[in-house]
Image 1 (cartoon, rainbow, N blue to C red):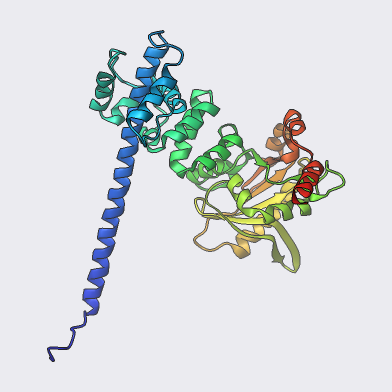
Image 2: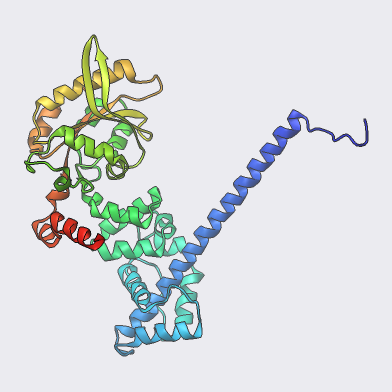
Length: 388
């Protein structure tokens, strides 16, 4: 071989290199994840310790009324560039401690000695501190979300179980703060898994039925649909076609409201069943359920005839559209209103998995909030005058 020739790697060697890159890449990403997770745990424990120290001194009258503001200002002077220790955040740390102090297994310490307080917290494994007091929540969930998430949950949710629900949901679905706020605003705690359905009698596997129940809500907040801007004469009766167009126009926000794992296939999905044309309002695929989900939009209250129509769509989907590896298709009716006992009574006689939920748009906001908002025409005139 010419000494100037470069030996080429064999296919086996190239495959080995690719495998080595994959292994090292996985190790790096796992290490980065563990480092970030560990740092977040330590930050939460620090904030809990500082919150404990502040609470036991400020609430007992040891400090004056301006103590927290003064301490924050002095910290900024002595540690330029210090982040996270504003007066507001110090109060958040106190609220964080006071919200969970009865839950955590942290030994009591002298409130005048912060060093002892934090050392006692850090001497115990973080999962030991929290786990045994959270029977319905993994300690990892509590420690994996950031302090900002905790602050949002504490400020907007007063009930303990509701707080635990959003902590676990944030951890499981890797919520951003914005996604967390949307979930709280939509009141997922009260609506998630509360849909009226017949899943347990129609889905062949109980695990699939449980997943289906948890995938849907009994009410959806479609506040991104502004009825006023749709230029509808009769605001009390929004036509299904107009509502559908508004949803398709902003399908991203609809999916955010509908839930995770949904992929939009198309609207007005055509089914040709023995020469009969049928059209599903909205068709989705859910990755977690591994099935097609047909959604029918209704502008008025629930009618029993809707279930028969949807059952026909599901039969056609399962017979002609469903792939071999997919599960039985599911249907959801989204209507303005319903009498739940009546729907429970009617839906039980259908052999196709279906659920019925309601929705609200922007016009359904409480009257006091709607009155506080500026009029659309006034805003337009204001914008026009600004441009001129």
